[in-house]
Image (cartoon, rainbow, N blue to C red; front, side, top):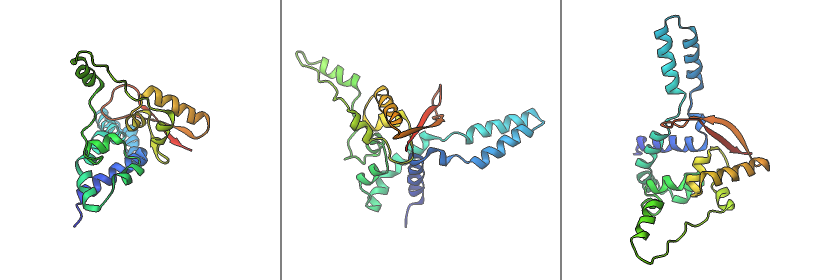
Length: 197
């Protein structure tokens, strides 16, 4: 018998990867906006605005946590390969966190690596391998939406480098901007969302 919690978590995550906007309930948002505008009682308006704030934002953190918790057992039970997850544009960082990518632990941070090298006298520190534009482009999803951050995490490139590559794709007509989306748990401006053309 299939584990519906596991399937629901994987399904929700894959929907989020393909199209984050599809997880927003636009009818509920419209109803809450109307309720807030029509409320005569300021407390009722406050409650409606609070609910509106909750439903207008996709909880990326809990969606990723659900995938990481269930993905390995789901893949094993259903014979799903890591490559199939990659073809669904699952970032390498999430595959590693779910122990799907060969069960390897996440890479050490550059700071930890530097301090490890510094403790060995006479050792020459190795530079991090440069990520090429072509490599970054292979991590840009063919369908669905993506952000600079999601491509940077998947490719291992810096956000500044990814931003330049995406700007090049837009200039060549291979990608377009799709507005912004506020990432849960973050402060500051909403992230720019893009898609392939």
